Length: 281
Image 1: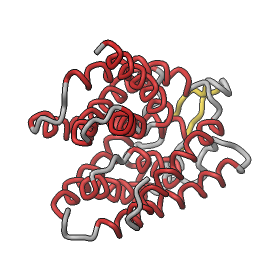
Image 2: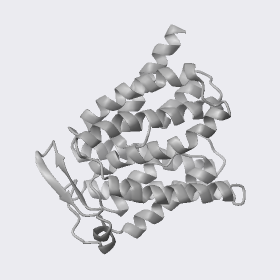
Image 3: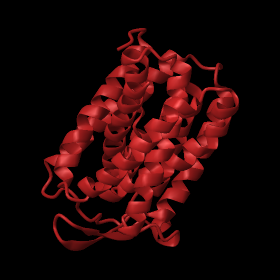
Image 4: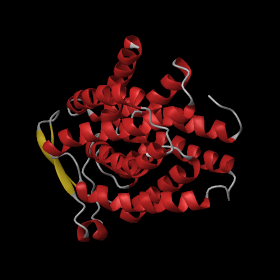
């Protein structure tokens, strides 16, 4: 029992660090460990993963708010798209062939890898957007943050707001219809489509994931999928890991964060495409 608690806490710390840096939650670490290494039923693994996302979001959001790295207006605006998409997706679940959806969404993630690689080869990792979006200006979505690596204040503009909102609708649909997390879609929407710098994109994604997960946590709680003896040690470890991760993320160059994010994006994209063709990895 003690060994299990220590293992869960350790996994939680790793997931918290990883999730806080990339803004994608810790499910990519937690679910395989709980199901493959510990032989836990997938139902309870998903329940624990939901709690882990809330814990990661809580730990990271507090630190990012304190450091003024979050863009609250962007988070609340895009969360509307995710929520609407998730509701529509849940309603439409079963009406469409999930294999086709897995292939489509997986292909998009793989395409996003190419966009991130192109950004890494650019002249600057976190460039200020050069186009003024009238919608962003009207909704006051543009922001600024202090870059601790370059030791300067970075002002940035948000571009292609309708495209980012449409991406969030798609992320919500994917989440509602396929039961998958949408953290990678959130970061991709802000970083690739809306041209936000990677640090505020990751920080803002952490907040949004917590809101989305909290909305579904009650469902998992009442259907018995959340077990306190599993979720408890995980949550404690994740809170510690998320606090550490927020400190690390702000000291990492944007190119290093992209180097970490690209393999994750490629793996998840390939996993979804292969699952669409009936191959599980």
